[in-house]
Length: 199
Image (cartoon, helix red, strand yellow):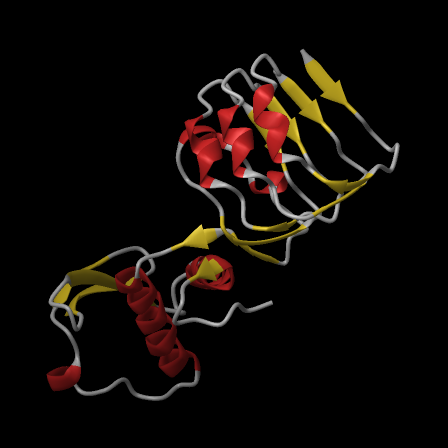
């Protein structure tokens, strides 16, 4: 059983009564003018295999109820007005970022505060090195764990007592700036209540 409605420009919302279509396997309603939120009741469509809601005006968050749809292999909600976090379990584990692009307020990566702290520390120390400024004296530096291909690794203890490893890139090594660019790209995609999204 499938619903296919492409470029026919129907407007309105997706009804919550869609949960009654238990045998529905394919729902394609892309390139229309659908508004409102994606209803949680889509999570009741236990036989759903493919869901395409792209290129509409849908808003709100992606329902976490979709995580329980074990047969769902393909999801496309790109180019809407969705926001918040992308679910991470069930069918969302194997999806590419293209399934979600075009939603400016949608958070692509959710990281714990300890990881954010580690990345920020990396960027701050690298800024010192790029500007040619001396690093703080050894008494203020965390213990050195070891040295790798692009720099050094230090041990740090954050406020809650958690120990983290902090990698400091050395710009004198070939490939260090590429690694730095990767870290910056990650920072742009971070979603955390203590950070403002960087566009």
